[in-house]
View 1 (cartoon, rainbow, N blue to C red):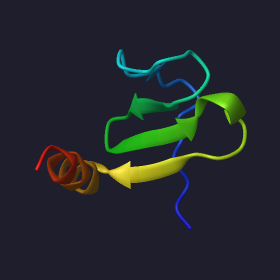
View 2: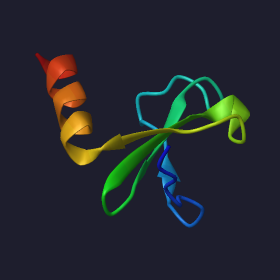
View 3: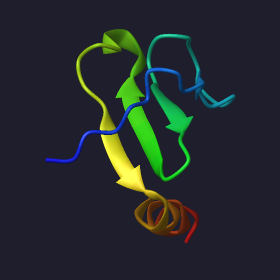
View 4: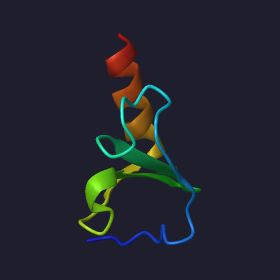
Length: 62
């Protein structure tokens, strides 16, 4: 399994999030995108490469 260091990443939430603690946070790294649960920031992080993240966003928009 590949490990990515997102310890210094700037995490942000969508402006569309209805509350401050019921959403996911995103961090944009140099080669990856991290996704974590706002309520459980230490519970794990999903990591996607840039191409996979772009496909995911395009699917949501489509």
